[in-house]
Image (cartoon, rainbow, N blue to C red; front, side, top):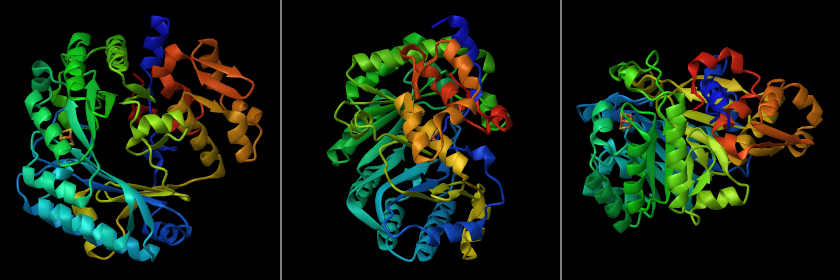
Amino acid sequence: MRPDLAACYGQERLPRYTSYPTAPHFSSAVGPATYAEWLRAIPARATASLYLHVPFCRSMCWYCGCNTTVARRDEPIAVYESALRCEIDLVARHIDRRIPVSHIHFGGGTPTILTPESFGDLMGTIRHSFFVTPSAEIAIEIDPRRLSAGMIDALALGGVTRASLGVQSFDPKVQSAINRVQSFTQTADVTNSLRRAAIAGVNFDLIYGLPHQTVASCLETVRQCVELRPDRLSVFGYAHVPTFKKHQRKIDADLLPDSLERHEQASAISEALRNAGYVQVGLDHFALPGDAMAVALREGRLRRNFQGYTTDAGDVLIGFGASAISALPQGYVQNETQIRSYSEAIAGGRLATVKGYALTDDDRLRADIIERIMCDYSVDLGAICARHGLAPETMLNAAPRLNELISDGIVALDGASLAVAEHSRFLVRSVAAAFDAHLDTSRQLHSRAV
Ligand code: SF4
């Protein structure tokens, strides 16, 4: 595609569309009482997915965009784990039955900062309150710099099936600039230990657009990753938002690659992984052809939730912990972000909901369209609009920005079918944004499209 178009669209600040509307549109109009009502109304046959947030790490990586805090002592972590168990019990009492659960995700922060005993207790509470199906995927994010043999045993015993290892870059110069020094050997040892413990699904997380990163250093990182043959890789562009993430001020913005360099890095990584036999899944994931995510893509079942691309087909997502977001048919709710406020609410026997969003019919239609664009790079507007009782022309007229994307050759419209051009797939967020009725009020809060 034309370099000027890549640079122009790549500069746009856009959501990643892990939900629609996105989190900046949540408000205090939705609080604990509404969440309690929505939990009680979960349909009888619904299946659930669970997300548990553990907002602690032993040190801060300068690029980090997560809700986490550095914990030097173990005591706050133990107190928090106890609050998590209380919250699980509290939420389950609102649902009033052991709803089937097919996906559990432990995110953070560093969830493996819990002790092996705490992790076992947490899994016990989950299994007591919910019916975790025998084939459930139980996934956890891991910092390979700090994972004990005892914790690997606890993960295996708890039924964990998938582990996501933070790698980012193996380039020592990049690692030093982001305060995350992690050797290839550390990553390889953890990968092999997890596999020996029968935790078969291993994901690696990579980042491009970091200080000092070049196409060559990205390719060398990919080469080393491929040696270990992870089942999946996620590849994200670094989002530099020092206004919101103060520790990112320690990254010298002058050392960051510009839009075109970021595009070149993303393209080089994508090509190298595809040459190594991985299937590109959506914008930022790569999977071996037999992996469940690649299969879901082939079968049109790929979904998007707050963790990004997922095979999770649950009807409701219930989030636990500080800042965790839940998605129910009626809308979204988010817990208190501060650990103290969250823990106080739970200790007081109250749901920790601080804000949320009640979906309208128009939101549900746009959410469906945006999810298909993000997952499939194409969307049958006729079929989706028919399901929502609307003529596709009405939706097309309500997305005027689409005309510009069509004339720039980024998307093609054939009747009511929309397809993102192969060479413009990295701009899929720009196409999704054409259907975002809330974009103008949140644009400054998002990262660049590339
Ligand atoms: S380990 Fe992960 S969550 Fe913790 S500071 Fe580093 S990037 Fe953030």
